[in-house]
Length: 189
Image (cartoon, rainbow, N blue to C red; front, side, top):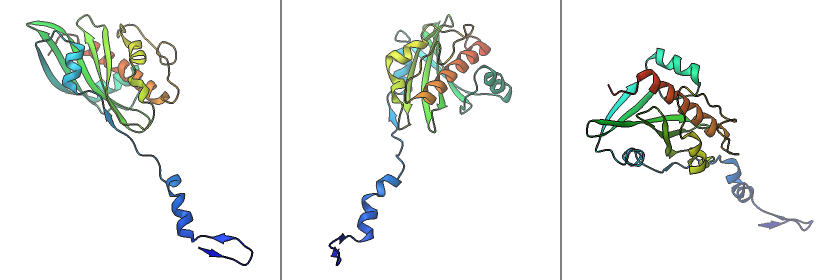
């Protein structure tokens, strides 16, 4: 440190620049895994005694049809898990990813054998903000929805301030999976 003739103290530029460096570094994503796929299966279908797992690679035609329902960036591969109690189908769990703001959100959606949405679980959230989409109150808005009953983000599904894109994209993802389930039929293949 040096003192000039006018009484001011000067610090080397390196010290000044170093103190403000954090302001120039963008925040990093904080990924959090809340639940694994096996945990989601058991939570959605506690009476199931076995699960049949298949990865579905969507065709360009399927993707086009789903984009007409709700355009949102998805990976194009969905895991379908049929839950069974003996020889009785209890329902289907879908595991998918949608883009939040800039990072992927992995979620699971359970549909009962009657085609009614049972639950939505956030399995992994990678964004720095908006993790409130994991709250039970927000996710509960999807329960009871069906592919043949339209619902809209901002009206039927409420927004969370600070998580607008995550809320909107998860809503679109749920709409797409309901439509995919209707296209595939509820019977396992």
